[in-house]
Image 1 (cartoon, protein in one colour):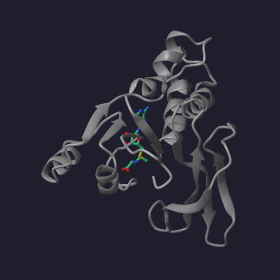
Image 2 (tube, protein in one colour):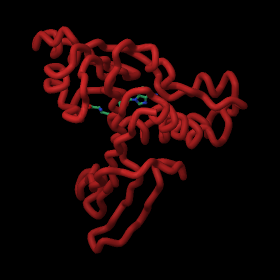
Image 3 (tube, protein in one colour):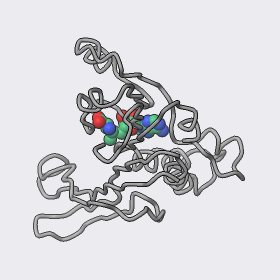
Image 4 (cartoon, protein in one colour):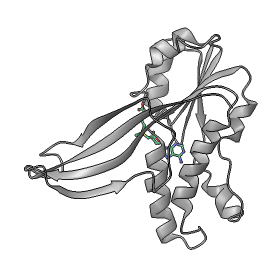
Length: 202
Ligand SMILES: C[S@@+](CC[C@H](N)C(=O)[O-])C[C@H]1O[C@@H](n2cnc3c(N)ncnc32)[C@H](O)[C@@H]1O
């Protein structure tokens, strides 16, 4: 935010419960905050109203591009194109959404023959390409891989949550213990690798 010359509108993709983003700061710094998610709970909307955050604009939207892919499997979907129609957009934040698109669409494609088998990597790539082609800067926050480890540190399972799609170079990376010992099992924990990636305007 501090590097932006103007702070008019910001869009948060995968805004969910508003826990990963400094929403009060965004609300103070920008004139308008567009929040996109498949769903926004009534409790989150109520919280915004009680805190008089009138500049928050809750938008329900499927950001994956799966319907575009289903309709025209031969064409690369552009699910973030709608962002170019938002007036005075100065920043886009993709907030821990991309791996969920990958996992969700991967499961859908396994059960639904109307979707191409490579739907998951194609929609991950479409999201990254969508951010790269914006006319304002964006920040991609995403867990990119995970490991399940036992107490001796042995890796029992690991997977690439980006399904082989290469991301732009990350500014910072850190480990996130999504399920500590005891949550899934007393014997193992699940640790995700998270990246923060700044993407400049095209
Ligand atoms: C890990 S949560 C992110 C949490 C959120 N950033 C926060 O601060 O609380 C992932 C979010 O992505 C949303 N999501 C998953 N698939 C989506 C899709 N296809 N389109 C829009 N939102 C989606 C989920 O509803 C969920 O709110």
